[in-house]
Length: 150
Image (tube, rainbow, N blue to C red; front, side):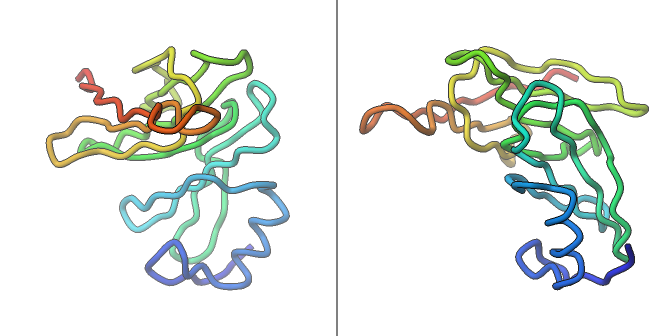
């Protein structure tokens, strides 16, 4: 599929959106790195069935990393390594952050997260993750700071 896209994730043109709709049932995470967009999908949420897709400036869409469960966040560090926030089946404490380094080596950076909903890198180089982001009572949510190992 060839399609152009604009510079912000929210302005993907109709052709790219249509292609994504065909291949990703529910897009939950998007980031941009080195001119490419990276999109994760939540559904299907069974273990190992979610992927991260790379969308190039000329509209090519390919699987960049595969074998995740319910992707809730994607982010790149300053060394261009991809981090994936996933929530595996199993209830509370089943959320993980996985670092992907070429060629598709997976390393668990954090585990035991409960109902995480998003993550981002701060200017200090640390990951910040919303934990207990749904299903909890008022005021029970958390923002967890994670120091990323080299």
